[in-house]
Image (cartoon, rainbow, N blue to C red; front, side, top):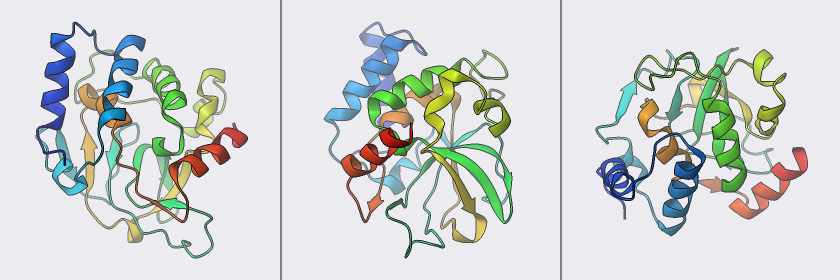
Length: 198
Protein backbone atom coordinates (compact mmCIF):
# COMPACT_ATOMS: atom_id res chain seq x y z
CA UNK A 1 0.00 0.00 0.00
CA UNK A 2 1.28 3.46 -0.86
CA UNK A 3 0.83 6.32 1.59
CA UNK A 4 0.30 10.04 1.16
CA UNK A 5 4.09 10.64 1.21
CA UNK A 6 4.42 8.91 -2.16
CA UNK A 7 5.17 12.09 -4.12
CA UNK A 8 7.81 13.22 -1.62
CA UNK A 9 9.48 9.80 -1.48
CA UNK A 10 9.70 9.45 -5.25
CA UNK A 11 10.97 13.01 -5.67
CA UNK A 12 13.69 12.39 -3.09
CA UNK A 13 14.71 9.13 -4.78
CA UNK A 14 14.89 10.87 -8.15
CA UNK A 15 17.00 13.69 -6.68
CA UNK A 16 19.41 11.20 -5.08
CA UNK A 17 19.67 9.37 -8.40
CA UNK A 18 20.63 12.63 -10.12
CA UNK A 19 17.50 12.72 -12.27
CA UNK A 20 16.75 16.07 -13.92
CA UNK A 21 12.98 16.79 -13.83
CA UNK A 22 10.93 17.12 -17.03
CA UNK A 23 13.34 15.24 -19.27
CA UNK A 24 12.95 12.04 -21.23
CA UNK A 25 15.28 10.37 -18.73
CA UNK A 26 13.10 11.43 -15.80
CA UNK A 27 9.94 10.13 -17.49
CA UNK A 28 11.62 6.78 -18.06
CA UNK A 29 12.86 6.74 -14.45
CA UNK A 30 9.38 7.39 -13.02
CA UNK A 31 7.88 4.85 -15.44
CA UNK A 32 10.23 2.16 -14.12
CA UNK A 33 9.53 3.11 -10.50
CA UNK A 34 5.77 2.99 -11.06
CA UNK A 35 6.02 -0.48 -12.62
CA UNK A 36 7.34 -1.78 -9.30
CA UNK A 37 4.41 -0.39 -7.32
CA UNK A 38 1.69 -2.94 -6.76
CA UNK A 39 -1.11 -1.02 -5.10
CA UNK A 40 -1.94 2.61 -4.52
CA UNK A 41 -4.55 3.79 -2.03
CA UNK A 42 -6.42 6.28 -4.21
CA UNK A 43 -8.13 8.10 -1.34
CA UNK A 44 -4.84 8.55 0.54
CA UNK A 45 -3.18 9.74 -2.65
CA UNK A 46 -5.82 12.46 -3.00
CA UNK A 47 -4.88 13.74 0.46
CA UNK A 48 -1.17 14.14 -0.35
CA UNK A 49 0.32 17.58 0.32
CA UNK A 50 1.08 18.01 -3.39
CA UNK A 51 -2.62 17.65 -4.31
CA UNK A 52 -5.12 20.51 -4.16
CA UNK A 53 -8.77 19.53 -3.82
CA UNK A 54 -11.00 21.87 -5.83
CA UNK A 55 -14.70 22.22 -6.57
CA UNK A 56 -15.63 19.76 -9.31
CA UNK A 57 -17.86 22.33 -11.03
CA UNK A 58 -14.92 24.67 -11.64
CA UNK A 59 -12.43 22.69 -13.73
CA UNK A 60 -9.31 24.54 -14.80
CA UNK A 61 -8.46 24.15 -18.48
CA UNK A 62 -4.94 22.81 -18.90
CA UNK A 63 -4.70 21.32 -15.40
CA UNK A 64 -4.16 17.65 -14.50
CA UNK A 65 -6.73 16.15 -12.13
CA UNK A 66 -7.65 12.85 -10.47
CA UNK A 67 -11.19 12.05 -9.35
CA UNK A 68 -13.66 9.25 -8.83
CA UNK A 69 -16.12 8.83 -11.69
CA UNK A 70 -19.25 6.77 -12.40
CA UNK A 71 -20.03 7.03 -16.15
CA UNK A 72 -23.61 7.71 -17.16
CA UNK A 73 -23.41 5.21 -20.04
CA UNK A 74 -21.42 2.52 -18.21
CA UNK A 75 -23.92 -0.19 -19.18
CA UNK A 76 -23.15 0.30 -22.87
CA UNK A 77 -19.44 1.13 -22.63
CA UNK A 78 -17.05 -1.73 -23.51
CA UNK A 79 -14.84 -0.62 -20.56
CA UNK A 80 -14.23 2.43 -18.39
CA UNK A 81 -11.97 3.89 -15.71
CA UNK A 82 -13.58 4.95 -12.42
CA UNK A 83 -10.47 6.85 -11.24
CA UNK A 84 -9.33 8.84 -14.27
CA UNK A 85 -6.23 11.02 -14.50
CA UNK A 86 -7.42 13.81 -16.78
CA UNK A 87 -5.87 16.84 -18.41
CA UNK A 88 -8.87 19.16 -18.84
CA UNK A 89 -9.10 20.56 -22.36
CA UNK A 90 -12.31 22.58 -22.32
CA UNK A 91 -15.92 22.99 -21.22
CA UNK A 92 -18.58 20.57 -22.48
CA UNK A 93 -22.36 20.28 -22.10
CA UNK A 94 -22.96 19.38 -18.45
CA UNK A 95 -19.25 19.00 -17.72
CA UNK A 96 -15.88 19.15 -19.41
CA UNK A 97 -13.70 17.51 -22.05
CA UNK A 98 -10.40 16.00 -21.05
CA UNK A 99 -7.71 13.47 -21.85
CA UNK A 100 -7.54 10.50 -19.48
CA UNK A 101 -3.89 9.43 -19.65
CA UNK A 102 -4.72 6.00 -18.26
CA UNK A 103 -6.00 4.92 -21.69
CA UNK A 104 -2.46 4.89 -23.05
CA UNK A 105 0.05 2.10 -22.39
CA UNK A 106 2.85 3.48 -20.17
CA UNK A 107 5.45 3.74 -22.97
CA UNK A 108 3.10 5.80 -25.17
CA UNK A 109 1.98 7.76 -22.12
CA UNK A 110 5.60 8.82 -21.57
CA UNK A 111 5.91 10.01 -25.17
CA UNK A 112 2.57 11.83 -25.01
CA UNK A 113 3.45 13.54 -21.72
CA UNK A 114 6.79 14.62 -23.20
CA UNK A 115 5.02 16.20 -26.18
CA UNK A 116 2.41 17.84 -23.93
CA UNK A 117 5.08 19.33 -21.66
CA UNK A 118 6.45 21.17 -24.69
CA UNK A 119 3.00 22.76 -25.08
CA UNK A 120 2.57 24.70 -21.84
CA UNK A 121 1.78 28.37 -21.25
CA UNK A 122 5.13 28.90 -19.43
CA UNK A 123 8.20 26.99 -18.29
CA UNK A 124 7.92 27.77 -14.57
CA UNK A 125 6.17 24.49 -13.69
CA UNK A 126 4.46 26.10 -10.73
CA UNK A 127 0.77 26.75 -9.96
CA UNK A 128 0.55 29.13 -12.93
CA UNK A 129 1.63 26.46 -15.47
CA UNK A 130 -1.02 24.87 -17.70
CA UNK A 131 -1.00 22.52 -20.64
CA UNK A 132 -2.17 24.08 -23.91
CA UNK A 133 -4.71 21.32 -24.22
CA UNK A 134 -7.64 22.68 -26.23
CA UNK A 135 -8.94 20.22 -28.81
CA UNK A 136 -8.31 22.53 -31.77
CA UNK A 137 -4.61 22.63 -30.90
CA UNK A 138 -3.95 19.01 -29.97
CA UNK A 139 -5.74 17.80 -33.08
CA UNK A 140 -3.29 19.76 -35.28
CA UNK A 141 0.03 18.89 -33.61
CA UNK A 142 1.45 15.65 -35.01
CA UNK A 143 3.41 14.80 -31.84
CA UNK A 144 0.12 14.85 -29.89
CA UNK A 145 -1.60 12.18 -32.00
CA UNK A 146 -1.82 9.90 -28.94
CA UNK A 147 -4.76 11.94 -27.62
CA UNK A 148 -7.39 9.98 -29.62
CA UNK A 149 -8.17 7.11 -27.20
CA UNK A 150 -7.84 9.46 -24.21
CA UNK A 151 -10.27 12.21 -25.21
CA UNK A 152 -13.48 11.94 -23.15
CA UNK A 153 -16.55 13.92 -22.10
CA UNK A 154 -17.01 13.96 -18.30
CA UNK A 155 -20.29 14.98 -16.69
CA UNK A 156 -20.29 16.94 -13.42
CA UNK A 157 -23.24 14.90 -12.14
CA UNK A 158 -21.18 11.71 -12.43
CA UNK A 159 -17.97 13.01 -10.83
CA UNK A 160 -18.14 11.32 -7.40
CA UNK A 161 -15.49 13.32 -5.55
CA UNK A 162 -13.83 16.69 -5.63
CA UNK A 163 -11.18 17.16 -8.29
CA UNK A 164 -7.70 16.45 -6.96
CA UNK A 165 -5.51 18.86 -8.92
CA UNK A 166 -1.95 17.64 -9.44
CA UNK A 167 0.80 20.24 -9.07
CA UNK A 168 2.88 20.69 -12.27
CA UNK A 169 5.97 19.56 -10.34
CA UNK A 170 4.24 16.19 -9.83
CA UNK A 171 2.88 15.63 -13.34
CA UNK A 172 5.53 13.04 -14.18
CA UNK A 173 4.95 11.05 -11.00
CA UNK A 174 1.14 11.09 -11.23
CA UNK A 175 1.18 10.07 -14.89
CA UNK A 176 2.80 6.71 -14.20
CA UNK A 177 1.21 5.70 -10.90
CA UNK A 178 -0.88 2.51 -11.22
CA UNK A 179 -4.13 4.21 -10.23
CA UNK A 180 -6.43 3.29 -13.17
CA UNK A 181 -9.51 1.45 -11.94
CA UNK A 182 -10.72 -0.50 -14.98
CA UNK A 183 -14.15 -2.04 -15.26
CA UNK A 184 -15.19 -4.66 -17.86
CA UNK A 185 -11.64 -5.09 -19.21
CA UNK A 186 -8.02 -5.36 -18.12
CA UNK A 187 -5.42 -2.69 -18.75
CA UNK A 188 -3.85 -4.85 -21.47
CA UNK A 189 -7.18 -5.11 -23.30
CA UNK A 190 -7.71 -1.35 -23.05
CA UNK A 191 -4.20 -0.65 -24.36
CA UNK A 192 -4.76 -2.95 -27.34
CA UNK A 193 -7.86 -0.97 -28.35
CA UNK A 194 -6.05 2.32 -27.79
CA UNK A 195 -3.12 1.32 -29.99
CA UNK A 196 -5.63 0.45 -32.74
CA UNK A 197 -7.20 3.93 -32.49
CA UNK A 198 -3.80 5.62 -32.78
